[in-house]
Image (tube, rainbow, N blue to C red):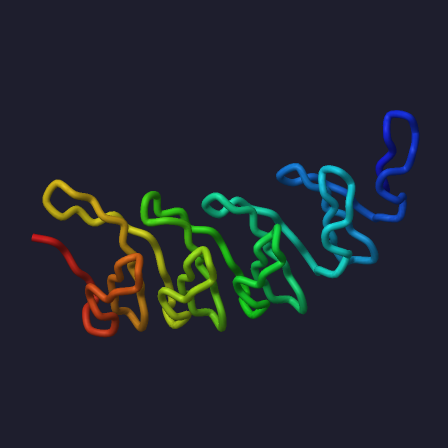
Length: 173
């Protein structure tokens, strides 16, 4: 596959096994590897990734890329590596005013990273999820983790509220 202009001129070469669009960009697959063209048909990333997907994280566009079976994240417009290719899975977690984060899985354990790639919670928990905890009239987003049947609670900046490893449940009274 390739792309032709309305006048029939080739604008993306007819050499790809698959072409699809995402966020206004062209994702092209050649010999099982993916690359990306801009909306102006300029090659931004050559066909080098096993798999790719584009996503909005906060206000920026990021490139989830898979290489050697593992996922990483690049800041799309700069190519800066935010998370190296060492995760079985990565997904975006939007915590509203607290910001956007990446939930990452490595060796069957989960952790949380800020949208700039800085670790907030290490990848050492069997599960991790966002929860809203009410303190009087204020509701605050927090992160609940589980490990070996116990639970813990973190603020979105990584500060421990309830240390994991001791309690099987918690409640506010």
